[in-house]
Length: 273
Image (cartoon, rainbow, N blue to C red; front, side):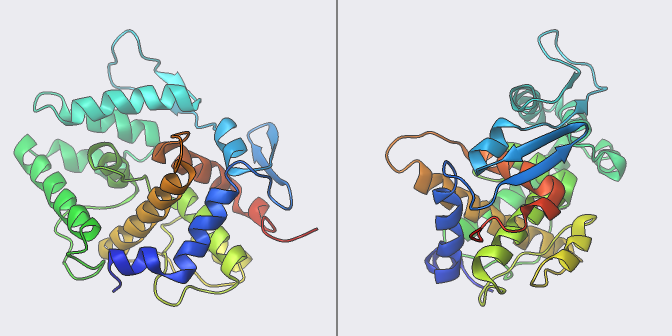
């Protein structure tokens, strides 16, 4: 597998990063219409996608008075996730923090059952293993497939890691779908030296794309794809903020999330009218 220094210097990787960073403010060549509930929103850029962020959540765990149990805006989600992040670091409250982020993301299922059975030291051991692997990749010490994955990873745990690891994004089916569509449109074929795999249930989007993206079958594949997505988003963030910081990694992730909500509407973002 490719290492971090080779990935960021890869020509096709840089093409994707340049496309997203240039299109952050500027219009897509074709407007993109996204249906969210009863709203039909026309998206002209990645920034516009962020401005129209909409993720309805409902928290069942006890919350301090200043927090909303229900919400849908980027601001309310950010507040809930900041609270969850603080609790995840606490021996007393880490299970409560895990429940909050998993309920926010709608991925409770077996994830919370698993965490409820862990002590704080066991939970933290897993987090530190993930952190060590991620930092080793960023330092160029590890390639994306050189180490066995000794920690859990899925859509739920990706959300947990995003709150505890530096520059780590949530990699779920929507974010994956958006990145896969961009790669399809911009490159016109699969990257030669790296690729992404798509978490379920959005693997059916493959049939609507000009190139094939395989689904995630193992936790190592999930981790590898999450890592590549992290690096894409981090490099995009660096390019946009080269002079003045105007956007965060979390905001770019949120824009991709919105664009991936209905992948069919992403067709043609790079094609001239």
